[in-house]
Length: 107
Image (cartoon, rainbow, N blue to C red; front, side, top):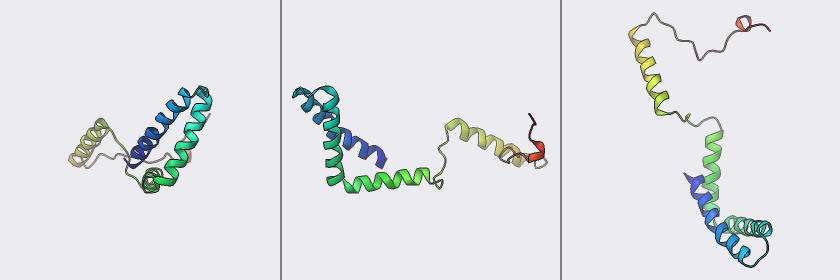
């Protein structure tokens, strides 16, 4: 959520600057460059708290410590599988295990 908030702040700075430079007839390419540079500078100087929160959120998501994002169908499927395994203790589920070298197909 912090990343989305910071991105929206930067977009809210970029869009009016882009429109301003486009109206000044600098050309669309240069308007985008100028607006991007100024929006970057403003967000870097004045929105450090939001930037740090966004950075921490992205670090948490990609560090491997975050919980996986699962769809409702995946959660339902996992709960059904768990219930079946609990009801039938003789059944072994090993779909999370990697195959051994000897079990890999040879090409």
